[in-house]
Length: 582
Image (cartoon, rainbow, N blue to C red; front, side, top):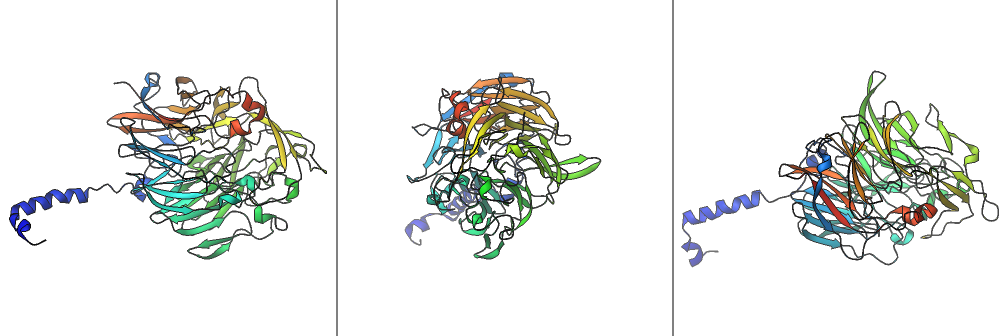
C-alpha cells in the first residue's frame, strides 16, 4: 500500500519489521517428514509411528528408567476421554512437539498437552447408525505427517485432521459400511502415502490394502487380497490377485473374507510392506474347499505399485477363525553362522513363525501356547501337520457335532502387538491359553449380514491363568520366561534399553518386568482394564511412559463363559503418563 502510512515508516523501521517477520515464516512448524518417520526407532524425543518405527519393534533405546529404579515410577498426569463413550481403548499414543495424540472409542481423536495433560482439541467422527464392527467400537491409533493427524473410522473412512486445530483437511471413504466394512487400524505412512487395510471379515467382505496421497487422500493403488480380484494403480487395472479359482471353487472368492484389519509394517531395507490377512469366509470350511488364498497369510507388497511380491499362509483352509492378521516384524539374526534378514509373527493359531523376509521362505514355526489341537507342528515345507479330528465336521441339516479346539478363535495371540528387544534378541508375546467347543452350521452369503456358519463356546484350559506374557528366542523357538495372568492379556507390549518390558492387564494394571528374567518389578492400578499399547519418550531431560486405560475389545463381547469371569471390570477412558520423581 502506497500512501501516508507507508511513507511514515522509515527504511530502518521497515527493515526491522521484515527481519522480525522472517523467522516466523521460516520456523513455522510443518511437522514430521518421511525421513522423520523412517527414523522413528532411533529418535527418542517423540513417538511418530504405530510400533515406534516402521518395523514396529516397539523398542526404545532409552534407559533412564531401568530395572534399578522403575519401582519408583509415579503418575505425571492422567487425561480423561470423558463422556459416555467408554468401551475398549486400544490406541497407541503419538507424541510430537509437546503434544500427545490418541484415538478413542467411537472414532474420536484427542490432542493433549504432553506436559500438563490439558486437552488442546477433540474430534468426534459423525458415525451412522448402521455400522457393523465385529469386535467393539475400538480404534488402535493415528498416523502423523506434516501438519496432519490421520486416522480410520468405524464407518470405513480415512480422515486427515490439522494436528494443531483438529479441523478436517480431507475425508475419504475406504469401503461401504453397509456391506459390513469398517476400519480400526492405525494407518502406516510410507513415501508420502497413507497405507491402510480394512475390517469386516465376519461379513463376507473382501480384504484389501490400499495407498492414498497423504496430502489429498486421493487413491494411488488398491490391492484386494483374495484371488480373482483386480488391483488398480492410478486408476488403471494392475493385475489380478493370484489366479482365479486356483484355491477357491465357483464364486466363493467374491465374498472370501481375508480382512486386513490390523494394519501393516514396512521394511526400508527390502522396500516391502508386510500385511497380515484375516479369516476366510464363511468360518465353515466345508463350504469352501481349497487353501483359500490369500486368507490367513502374510503378504509382502511393493509399496510403489501394490503388487504382491510373496506370500506365506499360516493356516491353509482355516476352519477355526485363526486369522493370520498378526503383525510381521522384520529383524536381523545370524542362524547357523549365516546372517539373515528375517521376520517374525506370533499367529492366532498358536505358532511363532520365522521367515526369510526377502522372499517369504519358511525358516521355523514353534508353539508359543499350552496346546494346539488343530495341528501338531509344521513340516520342513512350512505346511501344518493337521490333526484331522481337530477340524469341526460338516453339519447335516442343522448343527454339526462340536469338537474341542485350542487355541480358541480369539487366538494364541490376537490383535495386541508384541515387541522385539535389540538388546536381548527376544520377542515379548502377549499370549492367551484357552480353547473352545466349535461346530459348523449351514450358511448362505447375504450382503451386510454375518457370514460365519459356525457356533462356539470359549473355555479355560488352565486353573491359574489365561493370559501369559512370554519371551521367545526366535533363533531356537524356545520360551525363555513367562508371566501368567488370571485374565486374558489384551494389550500391547513395550521394551526398552533399560532392560524393561511393559504391558497392561484387564485387571487395570500397567506392569513392568525384567526383560531378561521376567521378574515383575512395578505395577500401577489405572482404574480400568489396560488394553492399549504403551510407549516411551524423552522430554525436558526426563523419560516418560504412557498408556491408554479403558476395558473393552473382543473378550467381553465374544468370550462366553470366560467373559463372565471378568464382567465386573469397570469401563473407563483415560491416558496415563508416568515418570520418575525428581
